[in-house]
Image: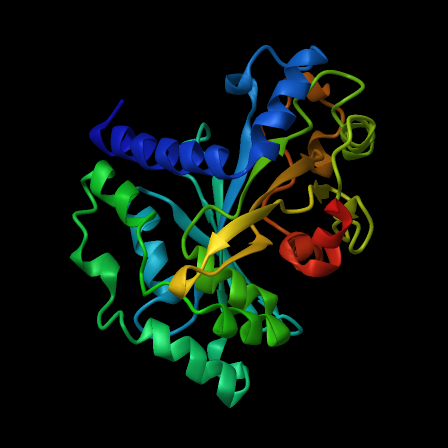
Length: 302
């Protein structure tokens, strides 16, 4: 293992450790998969990708966040634009196949109302320079700590609620910052009976998990080769400025099935290599997956 790889492992392990602590669905999904005999332990899960949300202001956003993972050999790939949600995004290919892809989105703050922009800048202006430029990117422990520390003061609930009226994404980032938004269980390498999104969704619902049904519970790309689903985000108790506590949307778990490219469709699925399957992402799928943290979906957990 190279030094860069060791540090990348520290960063990814730190992200997953805290994510599991904050999102009980993660351990519940894993435990249910073990109980059903799909896997022996959580270590058997292949993580398709992890995702982060950011604020699109000059000193933050994608241009800042991506510096961390570009440093570790990730390669920037396709751009995405979500007009209705006022978001930009890119995905990043890992330096080695055992690492997850990364999907990073940012809020187009300048597209929001003047009032929403004022609220956002009243917090983000506390970050006076790009924080990624002050990090020792060769120190995995330092980077891991950075990804879990506040970037700005704890928001007032009134500001959170006002942002949520206009952009639930904005409100989520204002409180949660760089916390891992989701990780993604790779479905196509699981045993027969669980290795399609249709079968796996049935397994999840049979065991009481609530699925995001925006755009359908199974969200398929136009070519039919990338199919995704996700749980509905769990509600968590959030403490706002002044000690006020409210339940707000946390994070969730995603599931992805990547079918073989046409030229490799004849190969038995157990023999397919990662590069022989559909790569990248699909804007239409992602647009609906974002809503896993929206109240239209989280209300289903009640």
